[in-house]
Length: 197
Image 1 (cartoon, rainbow, N blue to C red):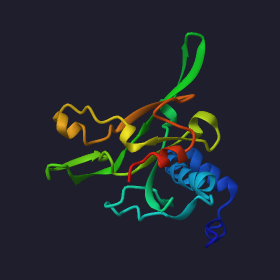
Image 2: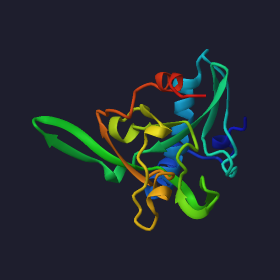
Image 3: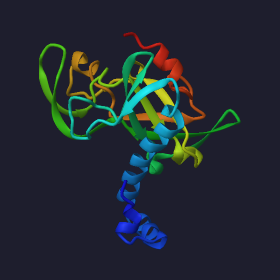
């Protein structure tokens, strides 16, 4: 593995200036870092017999990681909370955080629905991956994650789609609170054990 820090003659000061002055780059790097931190924290485990990262441009596999667990392959999609969406909420003397994350594709593309209809959308198809991992760093300041099964995620309510199409597409922007509750969980393994093969 090349040492790009040395190769590009980058200093800590250079990196800090770059990240401080370019919020979009900061978000992109945080997103890719979340993928690495997720792998190191949860999938560097004897229960995982293989793991690989699909090509970002492979539209047939919508996942950041493909893992083998108990003899089956599962796809894991990683998303991050948008820092500028976070709000502190006081409710019945309870203090918690609320935020949003994007759960869609980076660009608009054609996808095939159950009735063989093709539509152009940025929405992700329900069932297109198995587990969603949400990076909670903007909430906690640590590389913590919340996990949900794809089938438990909300579908789009976009008014230009009829109900049949809405039920096949995931909502593009989703809400999450911290501490979190169902359908989000603190470990992926119970969810993996409950996915039908």
